[in-house]
Amino acid sequence: MFDLIPIAEIAPDRIETLLDAAFGTDRHGRTAYRLRDGVAAIPELSLAAVIGAELVGSIQCWPVTLADDDGARVPMVLVGPIAVSPAHQDVGIGRALTRAAIARAGQGDIAGGDALMLIGDPDYYGRFFGFTAERTGGWRLPGSFEAHRLLALGDAVPDQAGDVRPRISADAA
Image (cartoon, rainbow, N blue to C red):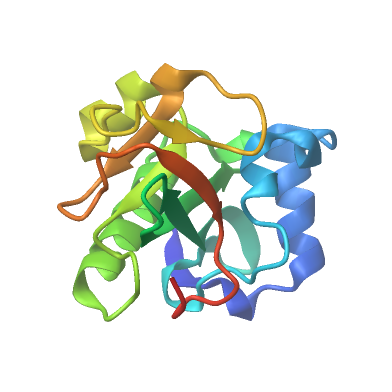
């Protein structure tokens, strides 16, 4: 059995080692990393999974905004990366981390907490959590991505064209 704890309780180098093991050392070139540039993860939504002292999983969530083509800004939360140690996959750690982050986003006063987004497998994130690409078709990201993998969840998810970009702080739009 594993426990979920605030990611702040884990040394950053341990998180980086886990991310390297889960996604490879070339992961920094991905589009999602461009959405994280220059901002800190949202502490309330970023968690680690541990078995004793062993780090077996993590989730980080980031403040982003949709700058729509009419000039409005809609705060959102980028979910991920969601990483699970290769030795501990397929036992529900990633699902538990994701469920906990979604629940916390819906409970708090986090800007964008009801407009979650991620880039991921639509079958997996749709089946387990309800993420869809229904409202993301007009979104532009700072890099390449497959449109069917740009997913969102929440009542406040915008359904308009615009650029998704990092938010300078979790409170600013």
